[in-house]
Amino acid sequence: MEATYVCLEYPSNRLTIVPCSLERSIMSEFELIEKYFKQQAIVCPPVILGIGDDCALLRGDPKKCQAITTDMLVEGRHFFKGTSPLLLGRKALAVNLSDLAAMGAQPVAFTLALALPQVDTAWLQAFSQGLFEMAHLYGCQLIGGDTTKGPLTISITALGEVAEAGALRRDGAKVGDDIWVSGTLGDARFALEAYLHQRPLPSDVDRLHAPTPRVLLGMALSHIAHAAIDLSDGLVGDLTHLLKSAQVSGTIMCDDIPMSDSLALEKDEVRYLCTLSGGDDYELCFTAPASAHQAVLDAGRQTNTRVTKIGYITPFVEGQAQLQILDRHHQPYIMSHHSFDHFL
Ligand code: ADP
Ligand code: MG
View (tube, rainbow, N blue to C red):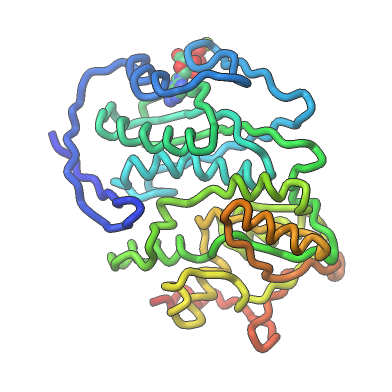
């Protein structure tokens, strides 16, 4: 029996339709866990007991806080049916690591809850390969999970460690801080548009399917920045969460937002739509005191990550968090809900 997968060759990002054989072997839940997950999981400190018992056991650093986060990916909701399982394995963990990064935490371990419509060994092989690639890259060990039959759903809970004073909480932003972002914004939204209209992918790397969690930058910023959030739902929405949480307002310059060369070629409304409200970028947005300007640049250089100042934090306006967006003429940019209609 054959299934057809749309596979993205990473990192060349070419879209190819690859027939994958669906060797449907009769494999028990426990054989599946053993073959695709337990055998590749490393057990080393701080993990004392990994996959195979009722719970995993870890001995954490008593001087640090545990940072814990969960993110779920559901087929048809967060990814298209037929998405490359290799990229899905990487992304499922990457989006969780991005949350740890936004806290300034060092990844330690994760659990994997998986609902599968059927046992598809080719899919499992590629998925676990992608998952462990990402896990090994960031030193994060798979310590357990749950496996069940059901609509394709991947839910990961990741655990990290951070010193309490170094945690990049959203409520830490202070009036006078600068607002920064990592990397470039808008590419994932731009890529989504290409998929929906079946156009060639716009950038060199498919940011929609292959986000880079900014773990090293987050850790480097842990004692430099005041607050951070990772950008999963778009800059304006996510930054507003941070402002509300810290009870401050903010001003950003929409022409200072960094973007890829291909997005920069687009007309203003497309660039603004993608960079201001496009989701799935998994870059960090963080605030740091103006006095830490050089330290932020150094953190970016040390971790090989582009960092760009895009605005500053101001006081609450009439008891409310307001996000002001200014264009290159220093005029307020009003985000139009109709801009979506004008897209491409
Ligand atoms: P229990 O019934 O005690 O919760 P299970 O029978 O569900 O345990 O799972 C057996 C072991 O396999 C447990 O250690 C569990 O954490 C692990 N496990 C189950 N599914 C996965 C998975 N998808 N990835 C990693 N470990 C898993
Ligand atoms: Mg049990």
